[in-house]
Amino acid sequence: MDIVGEIEIIEWTNRRYLDAVADHVMLFDGATGTELAKYELGPADFGGERTEGLMEMLLFHRPEVVAQVHATYFAAGAEVVETNTFRGNRVSLAEFGVGDRALEINRRAAEIARQAADRVGSMGPTGKLPSLATAVAEVTYEEIAAVYAEQARGLLEGGVDLLLLETQQDLLELKAAIQGIWRTFRALDQRVPIQAQVTLDVHGRMLTGPSVEAALVTLAALPVDVIGLNCSTGPEEMRGAIR
Image (tube, rainbow, N blue to C red; front, side, top):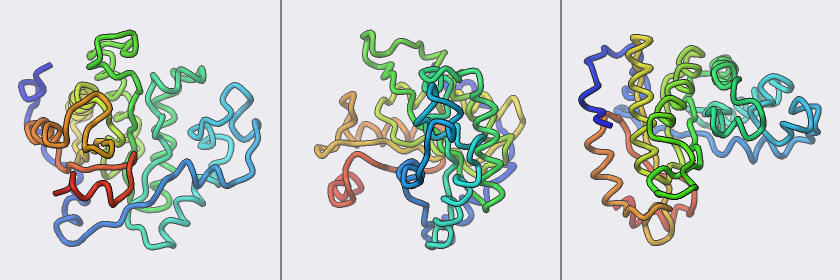
């Protein structure tokens, strides 16, 4: 589990996002899923009842709806839009019977967003909490690293400018995700920035217990380019954690 020991020097193939951040404050889009939920969608829009509600399936059955959400955020002033891939990892997709389509889903999501403008590849959590030594984990560290390596490959092949690890609630899963991404960087000889974001409760702690200080110390030692927070609480509750 030594990420640093695995890393080789890989030249930047795209650091436009970091250049933009150095120049000015970047405005991201907002939630994708809740915007998509505003449309009148039925089972057929998701490819059937088995996958109804899985927003990633709209990429194939209603791609124009996903594209419209991206366009709406740009019209509102966003500079960066996230791909429709929050649950685009093999573990989460398997719950709907489409785990084997992870690579295809992420590639397609990136292509649709690319057509809208420069954007970021969203990589949400698997929900397995590997740091908890219980049945909740269900998957191993190496399996999680492989899951994120696969998702990163699809997003990179689709042309993303940034890989965003968001709403992360378990530092061990986050470490595995970063390791998986770097394995894909090496495999493709391609590198874009990584932005790692954790989710905290009102007391400034992650679901599995670490404080914001512990999260910061952990992430600062890992090969990520931007550290952030998202979801769970609103901006007011995040002020203390940001400080």
